[in-house]
Amino acid sequence: MTAKYYLSQLQLMKSKIKQLQEQKQMYLDRATSITASFNPVKVQTSSTTDKMGDNVTKIVDLDSQIDEEIVYFLEKKHEIINQIHNLDNVFYIQILFKKYVEGKGLKVISKEIDLSYAHVRHLHGKALKVFEEMHTKLLNKKELIH
Image (cartoon, rainbow, N blue to C red; front, top):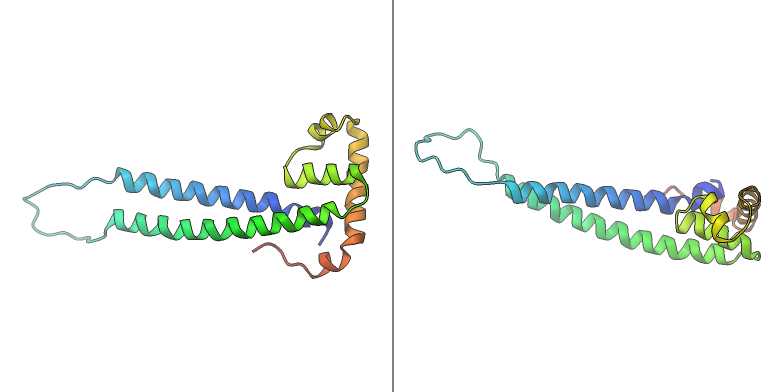
């Protein structure tokens, strides 16, 4: 696995958590919009499903899954921050941190650290190479995020 791919895991995890939260909100909206119908003439029902109960069950399951994903994300974030901080060049640290932890683009980073975009692009490439050299064993054994 490349350093870029490894470091990009945080953004993938954030996206996954956000999607789970949106899915939970969808079920929450459904559960709160379900109304009971009163029809005393009805003799036979073909469906006995509890739509509200089903939605609540899905919400509870998603809550648990979201909590697990957040815990894993925070652990991975802490690990990656420490690995970035082990680099010996302040610009490498700033660029990798801002790019992969904060999720900023290189143009934004170039303005924040007051370097040209071209120079930041160049330093970004060098920082990734140095990160790969420092963490070769880690990158060779690491699996994709869960």
